[in-house]
Image (tube, rainbow, N blue to C red):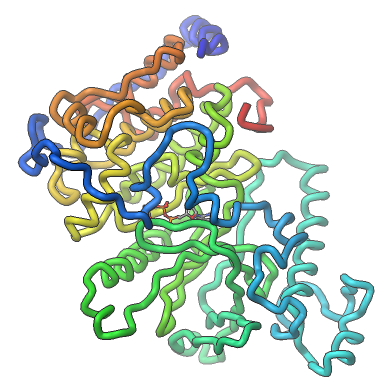
Length: 479
Ligand SMILES: Nc1ncnc2c1ncn2[C@@H]1O[C@H](COP(=O)(O)OP(=O)(O)OP(=O)(O)O)[C@@H](O)[C@H]1O
C-alpha cells in the first residue's frame, strides 16, 4: 500500500516545522533483559488444545469470513435496527406484557401512541394499571433518539459522544416475561439520604459474544429504553462448582474488570454502567457498542483504507494514553477494540488475560494473544517486569494488521512467534503487498523498538505526523 498522502505530509512537516521530538524519558525500571526467559516452554511435541470458549484462543484465519462460533452469535446491530426488530433480539420475552412501571423512563406513557393505541387504552384492555411493556419503553426511546439524531445531523458531525445512563445508586432488577422466576440481586444499602433507592429494570436479549470467561448479551435498560451490553459469569452454586478454581477465577476476573472499569471515563474506553450480583449470575453492564471489533471488521472487510487506519490508531492511542495515566495496561489486540458504526473506537475487555494467577488460564490466553505481544511480556513471569510500553508494541501489531488485513505473523505458529519475539526481539514482518511510506515506517519502528525504555509512549506517539488526517476527513466506511 503506497501512502501517497504520507509523502506529502512528510515533506510538509519537514519544511514547516521540525518533526515532533519522540525522544522518550521513561521512569520504569522493571523491564527484564531479553534472552531465553526462565519460563520459556520447551519445543512442542504437540499443539495444546485451544479452549473453545475463548475467542482469543480459537484459530484465526486472518482473512475474511467468520468462524462457525461467531456466526452462531447475534450480530452487533445498531440500536435503531434492534428497536425495529425487537423480536429477533429479545426472542425469549413477551414484548407486549406490561411489566415496567409506567412512571419510569423519560416520556409520558399517556401521550405516546406507538401502535395507534394509547397507553390508557392499553391499560384498559390489559387490565394492568401503571405498567408499560418492553415494546412501549423501547418505542419511546427510539422516538427520543430519532429526534436527537435529527438535531445532531443539523448541528454536528457523527463524532459526538453519546453517553449511556449509569445504573449505579439504584437497585437492579432483571425483567423476565417468560415463565422463569426472576432472581433478585443482593439488596443494596439504603441511599445516603435514607430514602429508597431507585430501581433500574433491565431485560437480557441475545448472546452477542463470548470471552475467555464471560458471555456478553445485548440488553435493554427497561427504565430508559437504551440498548446496553451485559457481560455475565455464572456464580458457582453446586458444591462441585464451588470447588472448581476455574469458575472462581472467572467470577474474580469479572469483579476485577468491574473494579478497573468503574473509575474510567473516556470517549475511547467502553463505558461501565453498573454491576449486579444475584445467586446465579454476576453481571457488569456496559455501554453497547454496535458494529463489532477491529478484528471482526478486518475479517469482514479486509484491510482498511489508510485514513481509517490512521483515525483508528489515533483513537486507540488516545484511549491508551488515558489508561496509562491511570497505571492500567491493556495489551491491545484487534478483537478488544470495538468500533461503532460511526468509526469511533472503544477499548474494551479489561479481564482475566491480564491478571490471571491461574497458570493454565494465563497460558491459554497467551496462545491467542502472543502475536500482538511485546518481547518483554513473553519473557515475563506472571505480569511482572514490564510496563505500559507493552501496549505500544501491541499498537504496532494492530496497525500492521490494519495495513495488511491479516494478523501479525500470519505464517507462523504460537511457539515460533514466542521464540522469535522473545529470544531474537524480532518484530512481525511486513507482508510483501504492503508498501510503507517513510512516515508509516518511522511510526512502525517507534512501536517496535525492542528496548521498552526507548520505545515511544502513547502520548508521544499520538503526535506522530503519520497520523495526520486531511482536514475535514470523516469516517464513512472501511474502504
Ligand atoms: N460493550 C459491548 N458492546 C458490544 N459488544 C461487546 C461489548 N463488550 C464485548 N462485546 C463483544 O463480546 C465478545 C466478548 O467480549 P469479552 O470482552 O467478554 O471478551 P473478549 O474480548 O472476547 O476477550 P477475553 O477472552 O480476553 O475476555 C467480543 O466479541 C466483543 O466484541
